[in-house]
Amino acid sequence: MKNIRVMLIMTLFSFLGNAQTVAPNELLFNIKVNTIKGEELKLEQYKGKKILFVNVASKCGFTNQYDGLQELYSKYKDKLVVIGLPCNQFGAQESGSEQEIQSFCRMNYGVDFPMTEKIDVKGAKQHPVYQWLTQKEKNGKMNSSVKWNFQKYLVDEEGRLIDVFYSVTKPMSKKITKLL
Image (cartoon, rainbow, N blue to C red; front, top):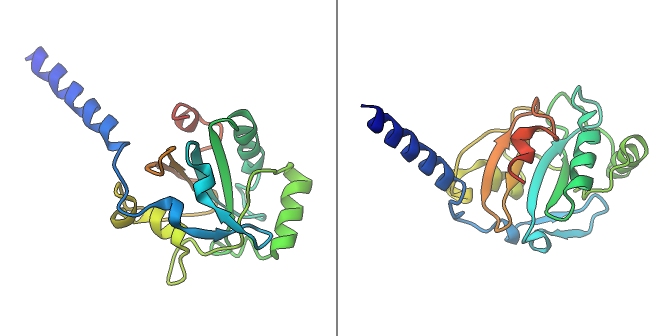
């Protein structure tokens, strides 16, 4: 009986481990998004690094996570890029212009990781990056929905979705760092 339990546990861990390497149905690196300055941000330049996508807002209870995001980016810069995607869909907590957002982030948190233009992360105008992150038919792994600001999506070096972390998960959490 004990051997059967051990085999079941090993099978489960094997399955869970394999779930992280599911090939996407669409390539993330082909999706177009603009930087906060309006220039094209080519996601393909990050192939070979993990990417942490985070929908951000300047007037949110989680805004202090910018500190942790910057720390994560600085510490793991050789193998990870953090991309902040400003969004005003939750409590109108990112109502500023791109210029105001950029200034706020640099002045208050020293942010130097890539930031994009303001986008929608849900609804009829959902940006293609978030369509890919939230739809199994595109990412090949799982469906999800964006619940609030500072939700995080981790993608591996080949553009495969690894996992999603809700706003309460701090950027330097072991849940995230153990996957880097």
